Image (cartoon, rainbow, N blue to C red):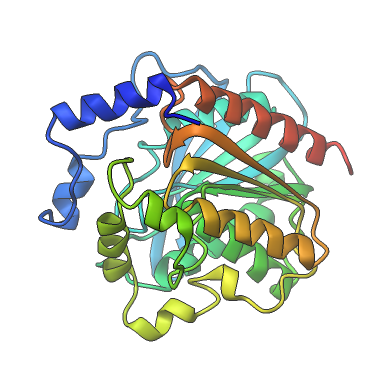
Length: 311
């Protein structure tokens, strides 16, 4: 279908501001320019927000913990990994998503500020992502979390990390994740898909930007095929937790996200995959101005609630 009118307004606004080309920017400059989804005085209220640091494999990892408005003795939990190509983004840039999912799923959400590239290349983000997940499980009593009701989720690069930590949790046998949420995930650094060819420029995330992110994140070309970098290339996806995969029609990552959903299904994993028509990469972060972003959050909240109530 044609571009959603609200998406077109966003693209027109970005174009009027000079676009979002990353090629000529340093990572530091790109991080300063990432303002979509940043918290403000109009942020959705939750009961409680705590910022703290937890131990990680190379020093402390900042996290932000959100508690829902509904009071409970123990809560299910969602460990969330922000997007930004493993180079930009933080717990502030994805505050809106975490607040919404906290209330919609009536869960504690733990947003993880994993190390960024190029200062910390692959697999630093993976190591931090799993360490944070394990810390949440190990400290479930303090957090008032049910250890049998922990899910992982993330968008774009964070969707990639979600897929990877779900695999690591299965292999390391802890924690036993109940669900995974993948918003337009990057799953294959070697992808050559129709969606990349069709949407390589003009739709927010460009092929040029994807290359910029990849070159900052990976140490060399050989790592493109590493299953902890490209989870679609993992040969054994059986035994992973049920998944919700959400993709966007005008997104270069659309096809590899849907291919990952199909590969999960082929491995016997329960999967729901929804392609949102007329929208672009990052549309869920833009839920304040794109209604389909709100719809995707509502769908995700319902899916998490159902998963949390199965045990």
